[in-house]
Image (cartoon, rainbow, N blue to C red):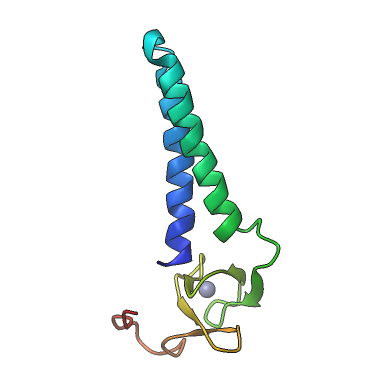
Length: 111
Ligand SMILES: [Zn+2]
């Protein structure tokens, strides 16, 4: 899965967790259950963020070949957060775009 999508999912998880916990204010008898469920969601989101997000210090930093922004990449496939250019990890551990940056955007190969 695209690491960029993992990051978005983590953000959604964290917000969903906070809202779940907040829901306990209205249903006081559900409060303990909602608190546990919400904190689990927040925790899962934080863990995903540490694995794929900008806080992971082991991530490789590079300049995006298309837009030139400094980006950090994780996993087999990732995408530039600025211009959404899909990047693939090579055997050497560097990242390269699947299609040349100037080529028109076709459908990227799956797998
Ligand atoms: Zn870019």
